[in-house]
Image (cartoon, rainbow, N blue to C red; front, side, top):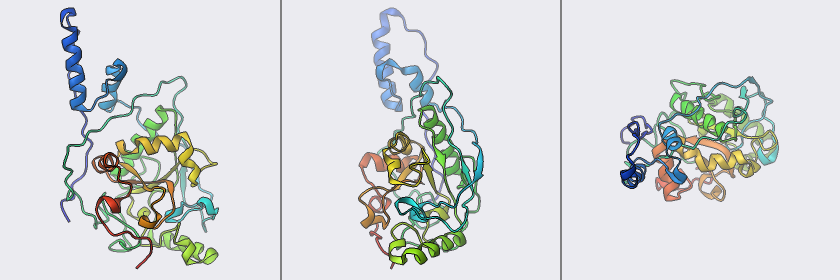
Length: 313
């Protein structure tokens, strides 16, 4: 369905500013405001220089944090401990530590994004697992169910499709600059690993309960390489309280500017089939993430007018 070309964030570019003549100050100020409106660059409080720098992508680049072995805790809607406190059958792999902003560094303005009206709804496929718009849920399994991404990258701190990994690195750098460093749990998870996770939960609590917080193999967003779990503190890792932490609030308010949406928001279990997971982020690209936010549409199912998927067919 549709063309499957990569979504790229459009960055506004401005020529170097010139010093205005005193007699033309009012005119120049007016032109700056108009230019800001056109390019999407904020000029609030007269902070034009910082806003332009942010819009041009002049953010601190991401660096890899220390890596260690996880303690077997797996994320809920594709296999988590969450509120149920479950433990995975084995370690889940490297966990990247949160990066802190430099001491005394001021928080840089976050980039502003403008999307042209009339988003092309056929820009990417909803069925191809290699597409950033693929919709995976209980009634829409991956095809093939044993799908493996052709390429993975860990630039953002977890194995993901390269485009998503680079966006994660940018988002983490911006979050750290804003004073809300993010740590990363798991990104990509293979079919076999997801299968073992769900089997463990089903054995402990039964399939009906496990289905509310763990995806069956072949139905997991993590298997696509487009999803990742993040957290701010160990106390609220993989728990709903992450939504109340500054880091969780920052992600919810700014994630769309890097192409991420909270895939399982509160009050949508009857649509997505999963409990609220503020830590589970899905990369869909800047255009779609921004469009969903501007239209105030919470789920991909609703945005693309797809049937709700509270249970498996």
